[in-house]
Length: 95
Image 1: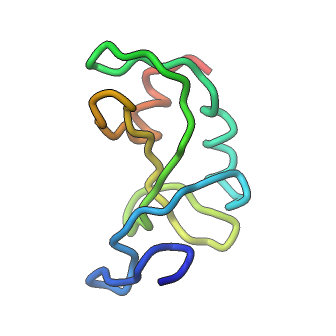
Image 2: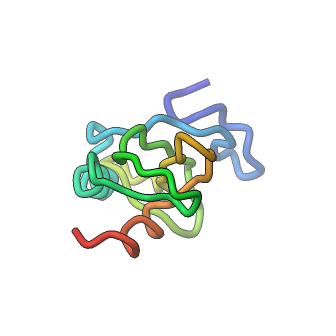
């Protein structure tokens, strides 16, 4: 296991999630910093502040870290556990 997950994906990529933070650098850090602690209301009507960012190494879409790895970033609702992607959060919030 490495810091990016278990590396058991079909193309050698990670199939497990990783906890992301601004230390990852690059666009990952920019996205996390712009969304962190923003108030958000899930479709289940639960309101919470965005934190606990997680991600999967991504092939086609995502945000680059300082090492050039691409990540799909998401936050799960603490109530219903729905995963909200960074793209969904960015489209629903006025930053």
